Length: 106
Image (tube, rainbow, N blue to C red; front, side, top):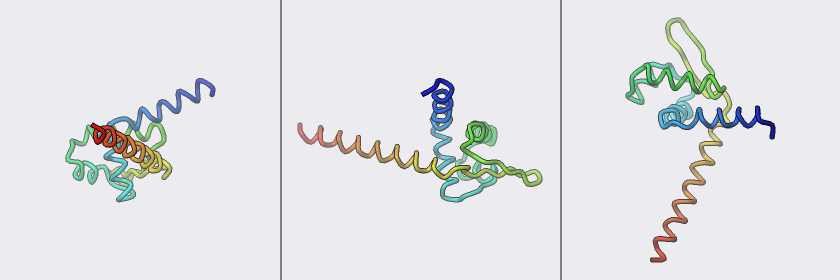
């Protein structure tokens, strides 16, 4: 794989690698498009913090932005990002099961 592609992939995963960003994606998954003010309220974090994370996700193409007057709306641009999160959860679940088997052997 060529270096520019590797860097793009790494940047995508880097954008996903913050707990607040995962929370945002989970919220948008269940609600669809949301106003920044709604995201701030649901996650109980300050607006500047949420806006910074939304911008990071938008920059790499994970989120799509729409302005309506003074309000800003975001939604997941490509639903396949949900598959990535599901895959990671599945891997983590398998790892926990493996760990349980090791503990049961004691």
